[in-house]
Length: 131
Image (tube, rainbow, N blue to C red; front, top):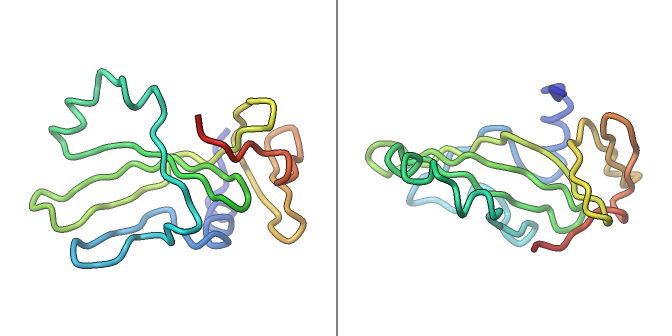
C-alpha cells in the first residue's frame, strides 16, 4: 500500500526527520543520532547489487527510532564529488514483538499508536531490538 505523503511527513516531523534530507561534509548528521540506532539487514549485507550500488555511490541503511520502535529504510546517494549525501526515506515500518514486519500508514505519537493497513499497534508492542 502506498502511504499518504502528508501522513508520512507528519510522522517524520514527529521524530525530527524529513522524506528527503541533505548532508554536507562539513555539517552535522542529518538526524539526531541519539534518538536512533542505525543497522543494516542481512539482505543489504549480502546484496548482489552492492557492487553496482557502490559504483553509483548509493547504499541502503535502516534506522530505528528508539522511543517508538518506528523503522525506516533510507537510500543514501553521494554526489559525484563526495561533498553531499542525499538521504531519502523509502520505507516506514514496524516489527511487532512477535517478529511480524508491518508497513506504517499513520501514527498517533500522543497516544503512542501505529496504524497499519489492518491493525492499531501500540508503541509498547513493537520490537525495538536489532538482530
